[in-house]
Length: 272
Image (cartoon, rainbow, N blue to C red; front, side, top):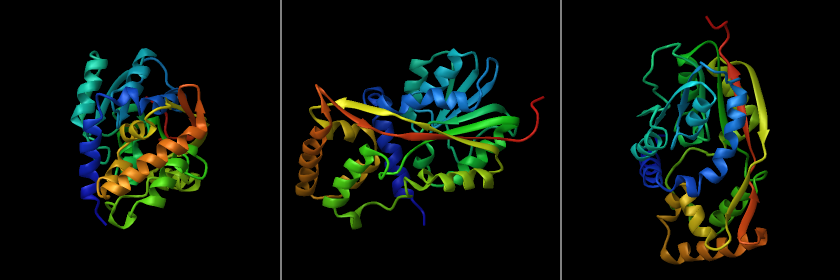
């Protein structure tokens, strides 16, 4: 199955959210960056590629620690934001499944919550393997399943209960890599060794008022589903999400655990 409509919707959605990324999505995704950098054993002087870089936070963090970094993202708006935030670094439009770099170009490759947005994550892993130098490391972050993740359990639970999912655009399973055994197996298939997994206990802190609106800015998949629903269905989901989120209210915030994990592996062979 091809996912052309899904890919087009993701591109349009993330492009539109580029300027607001730090007020919504980054509240959770940025929390995994220290674990990503630790997983690739970052050191000054390393050449690092940040794939699906968004506004460039992981690349910027690696650069602050002395690495030579660059980033790619398929959304032009994200690339513009990354260049504006980190003017001393190189950012370009690029495809995680077809990296425009020569073999053995980098000491480390990062992908912060990007693999479940691509249509062929195994191919993206193989591309990361290709552009790594021998001895280099790759690391990606991934959300835990809705069964483990209260944010996804709340939001997707309501959407699946109320929406007509038969008219949702065909999309790859966002939680394929949330199965730790599957993630490990795909890394092995891509050629990686010394595969490790570390849990990342992320806490999402969102405004207590307008939680539905916050979540519509947070990601793209649910808005893609809601775009095809009737106005009555969208209103019902809006009301239910705002109401049920109040069970997690603390002062003027909604505080929900959003656990994730980081998977890493090495391309065997000593660095020159």
